[in-house]
Length: 250
Image (cartoon, rainbow, N blue to C red; front, side, top):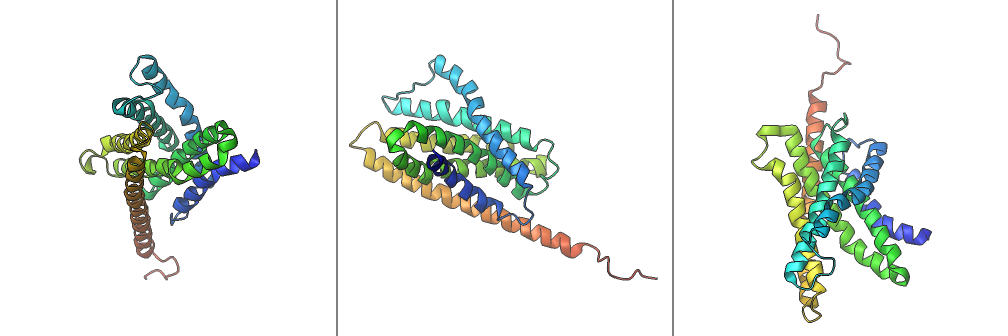
């Protein structure tokens, strides 16, 4: 049981370690852990959205065609899950005095997203039974990094809106939720579509690999750019601060 839990949690912990240690002024570990817990809670909150949509017939659990795959991807997964994550991120940051740098939004959003991914991963791995190893490897390579990438995008735009407000680029507030939903929905659509036709599964697998490659490339570039800007601002503030060791002018 411990091995299964480690297999489910380790990919998220590795990604969290990566994004956390890019921060020149690291956030309190207890708040990052709290973000993880909020992310796990988001898995339950998301069902409050997906459940009613399912009962009203907006999507089905067993897609039989491309249209069904799109509907379950966006209405059954992307919309409810990303909305729940955003709610948890807002609750985490609304009175957080440590949220004082743009990169912090990425750190906290990653904590929420990876907390969600870890709990979801554990559910899938436990349900897989004897096939838990192959399921854990597959999700470690795709699903967990996917949630991580969606979270980085959300955190980036959340910070832009928080620190710049009306001065932020046009549409920033909408992009906080819209872009993660679009990326998540496209990702899941490819995954579900690959299961519809054995003849086309290879094509969709290649398409998924290409999509993930560019998504993760963008994610890494955004992390490094924001971390670098965070470092630059910190150095400017440090260099411009008065030196208390200098004698006062007479």
